[in-house]
Length: 417
Image (tube, rainbow, N blue to C red):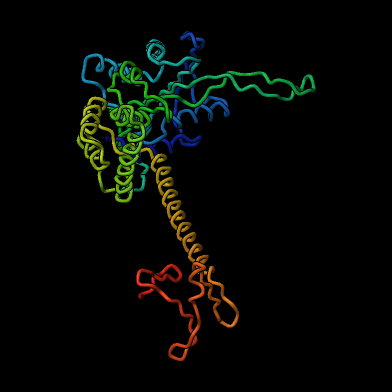
């Protein structure tokens, strides 16, 4: 990956009223039947203030997210069709959106490949950025060493506003508000050429997908001519399916093994976050097999996981942080901690119950004031007449005759005879 977090932040910082240099913006409104309803072209600086900031917000959203997660760096495929798409995009950029025929080709291709059931708006911005050089101290200087000219395209869903009540001034009453078609934030978008190492990379596209949405592989391949990539959400789901499916119907064992593997991945990711000098971990099929072994997955299931994983991800193994389900790890850790506490409470309750039982046994011996003990003796009636008191070694004692085949027990303990 060549695009850095700093590159993305530098582009985003410019999308403010005083720093933005968008010169032209074009749009195409498409209904649910894939029919073009409206096309328009505006000089960006001449937009009304409210519109200016709304369109700026859409552009800014298209350069947002996390690199490698929902902000992807795409490479062009190595075939004739992809070369043609790259040449077309460069030509469209160089036209500065003044060529209606070139714009129509983009609109038609997006409409053909973008799968969406409702209405949507295609927006295309053109910009030229004089990239200021940086001094050795890292501070920006006024002199420009590079001109970065690029296109930004955003595809935004357009939905009816939610039903609501409102004040009808002309009728002086509260009534149902008229529902308008509202342009939402982009579902997907791209910047071409990519802004990489503070300059233009005509061999790459920076591609945006709304968090949690599919990557739209058909759009990547057929509109942009690039090699499709999965988002982090898609990587996470695919990884889970590989592990769970390998266990068949044994869902309990599958969930336990998956949690153990996720816990190990979490530790790997945390180590990289603490030490940024460490490279990201790519989860190859072999590495995942090792995770399964550490999670004590049976060998037969482990072999199936490795095989399915290699088939699913091929030569594009995901980074560890892309398949990490942080919420699952957190919830599992809390459950384990809670279970451990419950176990400790159960042990303590058992010890307290045993202690209470011992105290009850001791209370069976009637204590009286002054430290004296009342002794009760239970013997068969025929033996009672033979029991008497006497003086032994100067002490008053209770004398109980014991036959050779008899035993004596006091408070549950046998007396030596």
